[in-house]
Image 1 (cartoon, one colour):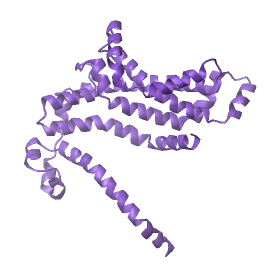
Image 2 (cartoon, helix red, strand yellow):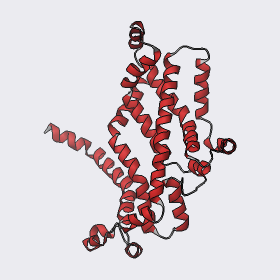
Image 3 (tube, one colour):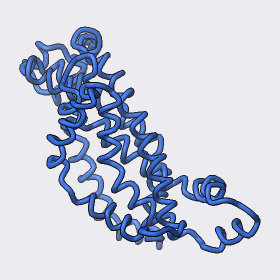
Image 4 (tube, helix red, strand yellow):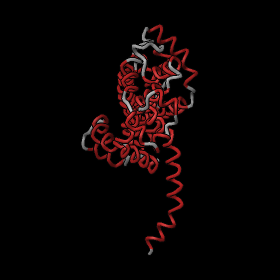
Length: 285
């Protein structure tokens, strides 16, 4: 009886959550269903008709995905997105972790000034830096190359990443580091043997944030890569498809899902670490 009372008490909350989830997922469901429909069916009826009329189901096809991957350049763009995103995430996370550790646990002159500078860089709008950085890249002849966009994404992601990791590292127990230093550990050993193993959830959260931001970025890639097909990531290629094939919804929906599938896999596979990292940061912050 008590259990039923608790269920009835929580029923309105559950209904609201289910309604919000349904509203949130409906556009994605429509996108997914439309991506498997032929062009003539897509123009003749709405995607929701397939849910109530099973006669449409045998007409579902993978031709839209074959077309965007092998004829419209999304396959090459898919590979380019990996070439851009994976190294950028690893470089950013490595530099940010080392910098955050130094700012949290190493004493050197100007540490507080350096920390305030990092915090100040967070609020600088990205758009203000595009022209001067692009001129510098042109002078160095790295504009339109993968190393150039790696540097750009790393530079834009570092301030916030350093700030988040520094707050977490700084909240670790001081006694652990004092014991390690008494036993003869160097600062780098303490970083490798203590800080990194204790910070796996927050490092995973930071990696997810950086990966999703770089994967979904359009502006930085468009400015520093120039929109050339040989280096264009998925977002740039999808933008080109909207301009050239704006009436072909069957192709655009398939291309949109190709660009979404990897972020969804990354998020759901690392969701456990993501939640633990956020909770750890909240409790220690």
